[in-house]
Length: 342
Image (cartoon, rainbow, N blue to C red; front, side):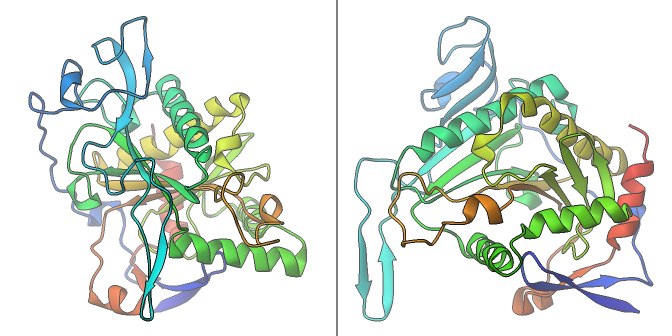
């Protein structure tokens, strides 16, 4: 038998298999080819990318070798970074907004063969610092209402270049999935005067069966109604709505919990394709907004990191219904991840 599980944060149902449970050995991870030598993200290939915006260096000049991490505009951006203003219009019943935005690449390591779970806590701390720095910089632009940080690793996860990198995309709209989660959190707070995700995290910590790893400041767990096998969520234990406000003292603890999560996944599956996304609050400081619309945002929203291993394909049933089928119960997935030796 299977069971329907409801995710109160996103108001969606998931079908979880409880009889024919798939374990780590039931998933086939295709080998990933490497492209060192022609990779534009490798050290000594700096001339093949746009000029860097930010870098962690040991005293070497910009756009030259000797870096640990580089950030530069995407050479082929999805949205145009220019000085034009936001334009809105209608064509009959249809609405449109011009494609103003920002699209940046964070090359997370100079070496092509080093994988994300091999970075170590010190280097991951610098990656998180770069995410925070660029998020804060883009929030200064009042045209951008939502800025997302995401990482695609592996061809099936959408990565076109094998070298470890993440991306920032700033846009003048709030995407539908983010808008629905924000609305749900706001309604929960207005009804109960509590953060929905604080409530969920308190319950997960008390239950313990879906916890993967935790430290004093962060917790990683498998969501009760996770859509995908071994999907993970990382949340700060203390309430916080904005990843950009992450304090310096929390950079290393955040790196430690991400390191734990990724090394445990790698111990089970090796070099698996995955997506990592940071869900932070919208940009309310500079852009105009409806009166009172975000008045409770810092109390009702809770930023989080979502990690989705690409272990199972999404088929017609999921696409047509929005109802996902998870063949590995979250409790089993969390137990496998907790017990693995790293």
